[in-house]
Length: 71
Image 1 (cartoon, rainbow, N blue to C red):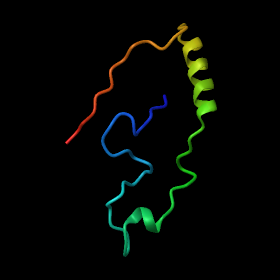
Image 2 (spheres, one colour; image 1 turned 135 degrees about the vertical axis):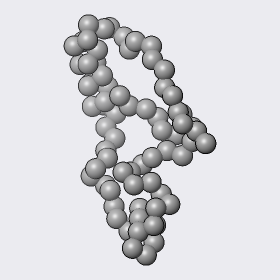
Image 3 (cartoon, rainbow, N blue to C red; image 1 turned 90 degrees about the vertical axis):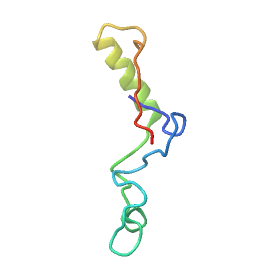
């Protein structure tokens, strides 16, 4: 499943370690790159969604609820 992290509100996570966590000297995210752990491939996400729907016997995405812990 792919979600637009900025659309759903709050501070989106763009890595395994959030901004604000102290590293050796600076913010961890500025010291260590997590490039390669997380990638965004919209075409692949759409393709995988279609495959999953087909496997589940669906033609469209069933309704679902997203719960957020804000605050």
